[in-house]
Image (tube, rainbow, N blue to C red):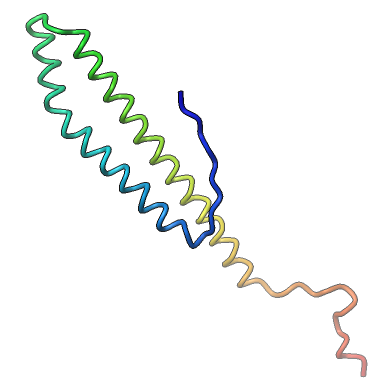
Length: 112
């Protein structure tokens, strides 16, 4: 059973965190691709010769589970990027908008 855990970090830490997450994903993808050919051979042999069908099915289910975990990590990255995009858009909007006048202080210099 998996549990999703939220994490808060400074915006400056996000690039490093994303790099670490992508490295984990790359490793997982390479592992799954490396296993793909032997698993495919086992599946074909089991199906053609009536061999270890249960074992072949277990390999497929394991690969599906591992690929699901990769997909979840990619979803996390997409969510982080979406949050970062929102923050940067808000910062850009705040930087380009005129300063709001403080009530009671506007036109103080015009008292002449």
